[in-house]
Image 1 (tube, rainbow over the protein chains, first blue to last red):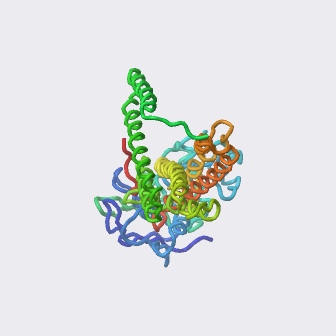
Image 2 (cartoon, chains in turn blue, red):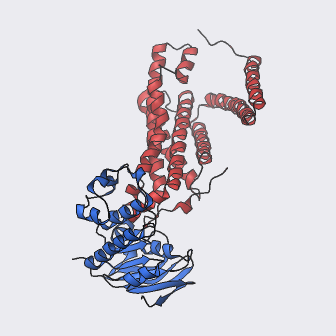
Image 3 (cartoon, rainbow over the protein chains, first blue to last red):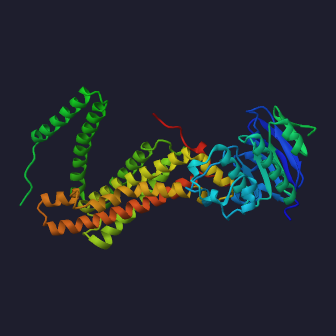
Length: 204
Length: 267
């Protein structure tokens, strides 16, 4: 199941970055690294069309500029480094109730959905934010350091769950990562930001 | 019964007491005395001038003068709405949205009230038209200013939430829905409170004025109810228009949150 369409950036420019071209095939993970402030997160925001930018982004034959913003973002889902919550309880943020098995993989129980948002820790917010986005079944994932605030054991579990989901659904994924070991484990491609351009490195 | 004459030296006594209040706040270092005195002085000058204008207007009784007066009031109210916002929309939008929504609501409600309900002859009789419009504009201005200020300020503070909701694929109306509701609420709350407290806690100013001028309380009450409803309509529709247009302007055609369209706060 899932989509079989590649994600393609053509001449995307935002901030210091310009003329960025890259393509990620279905089910492949492209890792993006670079010094802090080099524009990794802004590039993801451009792909999700949250900021004005140059160039075009394609999902298969569909161009970003040819569909309304919210329709594009519903398919090309950006997961920010810090997730935000606006209702009182966790469960109110989910369009449909996530399965018990999904919650268990990330270390939660169905009770979690009744928790007050205000008592969530940073790590819990991050994991629940991933689940919230992934359970919407998008067609592309843009991940901004998805395991940054997690301890090693949890990080490994979340990473494995994400990779499995990406491969089985065939989602092209752009993944901002710092950890070399993580890049070596998950990446099909690895790009590093060098000035205004990307340079492609060996993933492993 | 006619109104008891009030002379300028009697007003001076009241002014002296305001000065005394200013002296007290100065002594306690509250930093309010200067703005208090300036505001009091503005009241005297502005009301004295408007008294002269109204006397001329009532004597002339011409539609064109009434319209000019109404427009001047509208533009000043528009400027005031803009000045009361901490982070306002740039490029004339703050003034434009505020003024247009006040124009649409206050003027429509005022003309309807005059022609359909009260029915003076001619319908623009300045003794009715100008005070009615003044009360409408004053209250609509407060509502619109409060609502726009709440809208832009909350959008700024909650940019993370709004953008996260956009990232999850929500349309802009949904992403800013809570904030829009809050802005509407803060625009309408003063009027709802005023209606709830009318006659119990406070005696509305216009009714009091009419009673002082010798109108029977029964009639004064009817006029007050009419005015309260007219003001509620004006404030409600004005706030609605301003919040709709203002929240739309916070997003561009790609439904991105564009906080760069807001000015930085003035201190």
